[in-house]
Amino acid sequence: MQTRFGKVAVLMGGASAEREVSLMSGKAVLAALQGAGVDAHAFDPADTDLHVLKDEGYDRAFLALHGRGGEDGTVQGMLEMLGIPYTGSGVMASAVSMDKWRTKLVWLAAGLPTPRFHIIDETSDWAAVAADLGLPIFVKPVHEGSSMGATKVTDASQLAEAWALAARYDTLVIAEEFIEGQELTIPFLGDEVLPVVRIVAPDGNYDYQHKYFTDDTQYFCPSGLPAAQEAELQALMLRAAKVLACRGWGRGDLILTAEGKPYLLEMNTTPGMTGHSLVPMSARVAGYDFAALCLSILEKARLG
View: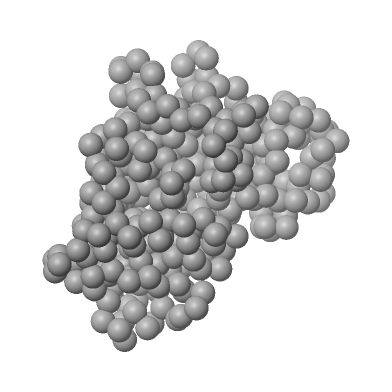
């Protein structure tokens, strides 16, 4: 039995649109920690109030919650109040990173590259949005992950319907220019940037289904990129995480054009840990098996 971590709660499930994936992540993490001798227990905030963590003597929390109510600073804030160290980013970094619009504003202020965008609503001039951003356009909720409510629009006439779908998930909706290129994701573990994963999805459609429930998507890690280029992208991702004040672990997504120009898309502060997930895949190439990855993340749990 590993006593250095004390009693650990693996927070999973929750009430967000990503509950199903969170349960898969949490169960995988729980099994790995228990297998490594950690006194770890499942805890679903949808079933039990978080203050019970203090009452039941938990010493640390491993966050495997995805989406709103788990990845957006709210749970982090409650754990701060309870005085229970937790994995991943703090309150501010979690809140900003969950907000695709404000993430872009921070990156742009820091001089980091990200696709152009519009915040849209039912009053938007769809023809003007299409004329400015060009086609295709990605329309997505500002505060959802896992491609929830996202649509790739190929004609201006589809924008209103795409906005309506995204608006079912969020009051804020973003339209983002489509950048043609290779889809990449880069995890980090503390100050260590892990190997780049290159993603090839059917018809370039890396949606919720293709992320978690099919085997049609291809993943390449090592990425096949030249070593110098990969190192540059890793340095960019670490900077992108630092300006958002991210810590502990996370994963950033980007597009690399044929000309070699990267565009940052979004930051995930509590990435998936399922059988299809990309952080474990990258970590394996860096020499971490799944249990070692989970222990390293848990080791970095903190307050403040």
